[in-house]
Image (cartoon, rainbow, N blue to C red):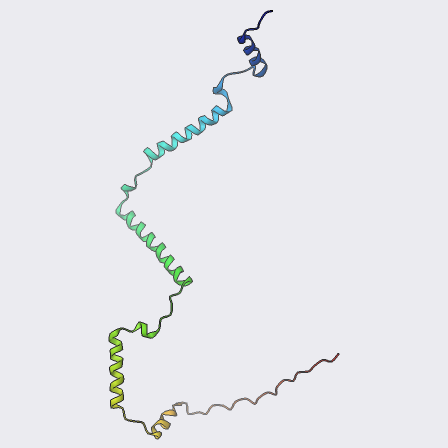
Length: 152
C-alpha cells in the first residue's frame, strides 16, 4: 500500500478548508491588533512630543488658576454655611474678659450711686404712650359656635 505523504495530506486539507489561504497577515485578528498598536503609538508620541509641559505655565495663568481655586473654595464655604449653619452661641461666650469686667464695674457703680425710686416716679415712667389719640375700642365678641350632634 502506498502511504500518503504528510505534505500531500496538508495540502489537500488546505485546499478544501481555505482554498484562497493567504497567511496570517490577511486575517481579521491581525488587522485589529495592527489598529490597536497604531493607536498606542500615536498616544505615546502625543504624550512625549506634542503635549506641553506644566512647568511652562506663565505667571498670569498661575494667577488665574489661583482665582478659580479660590472661587470654588468660596462656593463650597457658602454651600457649607447654608447646609450646616454655625451653632448659636450665648452672649456670655461672645463677650471678652475686658467687657465682662467693665460690666461688673458698671453694675457696682450703679448700685452705689442710684437712689431708690419713689412710687410716683414709677407711675410716671409707666405712662410711655406718645400717641395723643386714644385707641379704638375692640370689636364686639362674636357668639360662640354651637355643636350639633346627629342622632341615628
